Image (cartoon, rainbow, N blue to C red):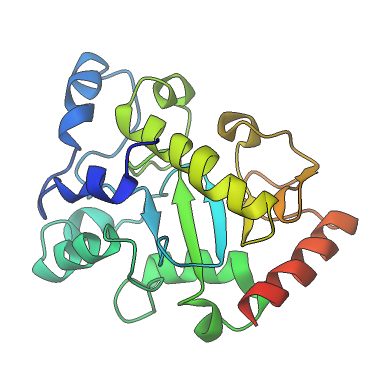
Amino acid sequence: MPIDIFEFWSIVGPGDKQHPQDRDVLFRMSGKHKFELDCLPYPFMGPLKTAPAVLLYLSPGYDKSDPERAETESGRNWVMECRTGVQSLPGQMNYEAAWKWWRTRTALFGSWENLQSKVAVLEIGAYHSKSFFDYPLLSALPSSRVSVDWAQNVLFPKAVAGEGIVVCLRSAAYWGLREGEKYGNALFAPHVTRGGHMLKGPMRNEIVETMKAFVG
């Protein structure tokens, strides 16, 4: 059985900038990666425990407000709630930068108000970065391995069986998928842009149709 991703992240305190199990790796690689470690880490947002639809990405991006949010009570409270896996995706009022990001990537599937409580985002990396170039660390960081294991052992079987939909929108190979392929009923790895938008084509049309069937 995979490590429970929610229990794994439950030991991280509200002001912690690193997961305890990642600290040694990040220390050894200090100066050799571009993670913004003045921000609060989180590998998923949205109701990952219950969402019928999950989007796979690489790592949180970076907004100039993120370091400041990391020092506020409201920002820390949001991340703590986010890590439980039951909180809805952020809205404009509680995290505008993240709201804008996920809204643009789900616009094809319906209104953001409807999707907010039905879609979750899972990332391989938990640490913010302006541009991601730290691929070797994905296999070294315990937190990244937990994300991949959770996807492969919990999410993928459900999607293959048609009990939910999973769409990989960044770095399919690192999730153990082949870009351009569909697996079973509803596990998709479409061709995408670097920004995580699906390219036009039959698979995108099928994903949109399948997604709407799951999220209404």
